[in-house]
Image: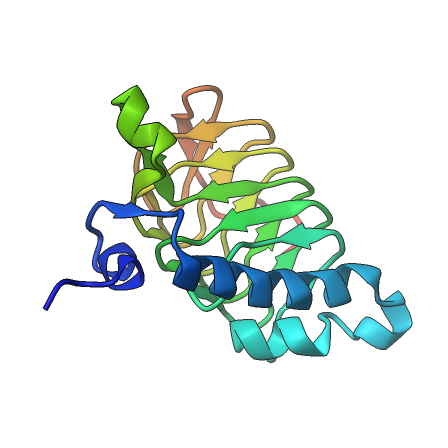
Length: 192
């Protein structure tokens, strides 16, 4: 029996994003995102209830506005904070560890569209997972591309475009992001 487009998407194969089942999943996520984005902050309590249920992230905080097309592919660790304007295009699993901080307008992409223009117009794409370790700080407007892993404790500078894996406890900046240094232990005058 032929795989559904969702099964292909989840298994990392080429799939068509122009599919009724995927449309229905996106509509469900859009409803949860819409509720979250329009709720009064005092009522939202860190995350709108429908979005919290979709993401299964009881101890994370997401500022509004936020956007994701599916939600069920996103895993947020305890104490993780996403600032206003974050977008996670989760056509593949996106795992963000504990106590991470994502600045405003951070974008995480999983889908790669086909290079052939006719296949691209037909909605053909492939999705690659993104993994972000524990205690990672991603500066505002940074872009994380499909298939990237960012190690524990790393820092991604604001506006950086991360095209390849980032080692734990390193700082990367630029477009494409490049390592500028390994993080050092806090100094005598640093807050701990």
